[in-house]
Amino acid sequence: MITGILFPCDEEQPIKRVEIDAENVDTIREMVGGKYEAFNFDSPPASILANDEAMLWSLPYNLRATVLLWQHTKGLRGQAYISGDAILTGAPDGRGFTKSVPQQLIDLLLETETYGVEFLHHPDGPWSRKAVTFDGWLEAYNYAIIHEETFATVRSARVIGV
Image 1 (cartoon, rainbow, N blue to C red):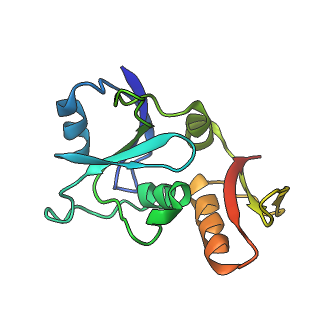
Image 2 (image 1 turned 30 degrees about the vertical axis):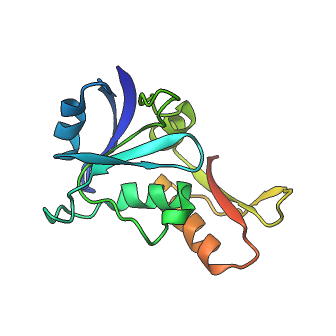
């Protein structure tokens, strides 16, 4: 069993920690509504598992999973969208077995109450933080993405708990 985080596409439903038998593909298929594909994060080592036939079935857009994907996989920003329910897990190990979601993401997404955003302007640092705080991780992630896309001096942004 591994630990994951379920992202329902219905924004009225909270995201939640789930225990998954990652070796049983039927369990994951039930959770995402069919065959699935993995979108691997650049950092930290994590993946979003989502229905790979979502467009064929016209599954509803999953804003929360998409925003998370875009912040952690910048090459897919504006290119890939998540539809339907999705599961955040750890990245696969060297043998291809899915691992549990990294503790830092569990803490950030499920345990943190107040968020901030740090920006990197130079490759060697340091990270700087604006005084703006957020009560929800989704707003903080959106703020980070908008600033990365809007300001040429921002090389990278990250969401932190404050």
